[in-house]
Image 1 (cartoon, rainbow, N blue to C red):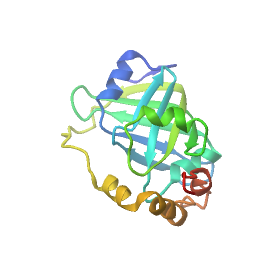
Image 2: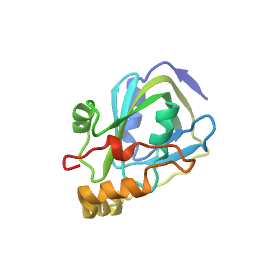
Image 3: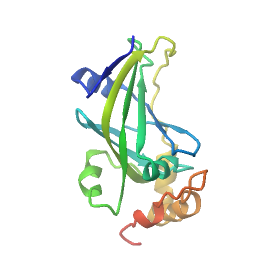
Image 4: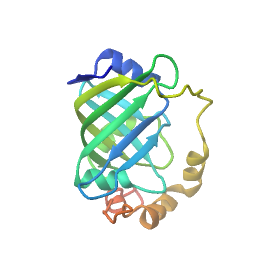
Length: 187
């Protein structure tokens, strides 16, 4: 059954590496709770209490808005193959935008993804495992390429325009600072 840890073990890190998807949960004190699925080989473990993940352009930007107000973040992995396991990482996150000094050292940790807009740097304060016996078996068939193709077609200027039009506020009206903090080389 469920167990709690103060940090990631080698076993936890191995489990994370095997997963193709993870889920991110955030909220402010009075916002809607946001839960987002993430994939695209966008997660890295930097230490037993530190993880980072690369966020790409999407229809919303709830996670960035929430974290800049209330830095709590929960990340969940669950096994869709093999032994039933759910792994939750609880911690405090910060948003790293392209204009932030840490972008230059963190971004090279990932394969470049078209539409990359933020990195979330998370310091863990609790790691929890629980059974995943109610999680169904699902088979991985491959990555979806539509988002990358769309972002490549937009180009830098098109992405900036999209961020300004579609990503400046959360659904609850919380600023994301996407345009001002993601100054691209030509902007």
